[in-house]
Amino acid sequence: MSIYIQYIIDAITVGGLYALAALGIGLIFGIMRLINFAHGEFIMVGGYSLLLLLGAWTPVAVLTMCLVIILLAVATERIAFRPVRGSDPATMLVTSFALSFFLQHLFVLLFGARPKGIDIAPKLMEYVVFGGLRFPKLHIVTVVVTGGLLLGLALFLKRTDFGIQMRAAAEDFKMARVLGVRANLVIAAAFAISGLLAASVSVLFVAQTGTLSPRMGVQLVLVAFVSTIVGGMGSLVGAVLGGFFVGALTVALQALLPANIRPFWEAFVFVIIILVLLWRPQGLLRVRAVQERI
Amino acid sequence: MPIWEEGNEQNLLTVDHLEVRYGSIVALRGVSIEVIPGEVVSVIGPNGAGKSTLLHAIMGVVPAKSGNVLLDGNSLLGLPTESVARKGLALVPEGRHIFGTLTVGENLRLGATIRNDRSGIEEDLKRIAEMFPVLGVRLGLPAGKLSGGEQQQLAIGRALMAKPKLILLDEPSLGLAPLVIDLVYDTLKELQSKGLTILVVEQNTTRALETADRTYVMRTGAIELSGTREELLSHPNFEDAYFGFSPTGNAQSSP
Image (cartoon, chains in turn red, yellow):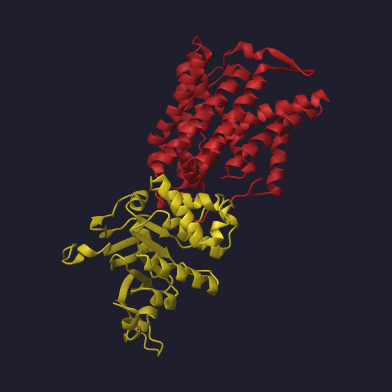
């Protein structure tokens, strides 16, 4: 019995991480139809920032890193994406690839291509025993951080005027502007939030894996991107749902596949995702196609 | 010729020789219209005449190649759409463009984005809910669940929440049942009696002529005629201007 509870906790831990990453991508996509592949590099730069801040009191290091990544995200919007805003989605996509490669290679130059070990909070790896279950404290932290961020973001989007404006902009950006919603402000805020989400993923991911590499964001952003598609492109709830779905699938396959084919779990994850998409091509949560005629 | 002519000071909106191109296609070829405060003005014309483009150019959704758009004598040309909205223009777009995943109440609140008077907004929300009872009882419902007629009322209510100086309506009767069209036009008349200035674009000629104080007839990107309902209906070229040929069969090219 307890082994299943263990799996559920694992699924929430992995799924939460994917959900946070997927939400960062889904938020930007919803508002500007940009799939920001450089989101993975926000996560990567966050990891190296933690390396540089090693030695500082952990909360200070984490907060400073969050601030750095938020600024990085807002700066990339201003410098790289604003000049191509409103152009073809393919142009914006290529811009995000360019930014992604630029940041990866910049960090290869600065820190080398080889992975680095980093142990940001050794205490979090200590196990706690709870009701017959044994799991690292880090899992609790992950669940609390994920839950807190999702709840905070949900309240912000539901309850504040600016949050409602952001949701409106995500659904029909041109109409939102016709109502007087300030495009630059909403987009800058979306990038700031995606930066905060990337920074959170960074802390949790680095704490879980204990390694850094300039390409560490690539795999994560791919999984996050797939999650937003499974969840329903353009839906924020869908992105979260997709993240948890892919996370749960990963944990389930790693646990349940026979040992001899277990190393190929990723192939099985993607096969199941393809089947889900054949069943629901619009993703788990359908979003009405946005009409362009205004 | 001067952009600013004598006697124009009283205009709320002046569109002056506006030209809009989509690539090599000329969508508006020097369109000029005027709207005086308190007036209902309609622009009629067949599909593709450039009526929607005119509204989009006024709102800054599409850029103008030349000409000018003035609100209270101040040029709106080149301003981003949100700044035009903040000057007091509200658009009810064709196809309504309500936010389907947001609630009816949130849609209405979004209409008040340009305002800061919190208590005034709450009061107006109540007023709109009374004015459109179908919306009043569905404030917490996702707007995507509303029927077409209810969505049109929501789109109008949302525009009113901005307390606009001028409301622009793009084909408000399109795709609605005749009874619902009655309701929409009754609403417009009620708003007019309260002093709201309205610019409405319509293919539904009968409705537009009935409701408007003055009407412009538009075809292939240019204004062909203008006047009151009586003036237009008695004008010998009215049908020519609208259809591009007279129903008697005399084909005629427009200038």
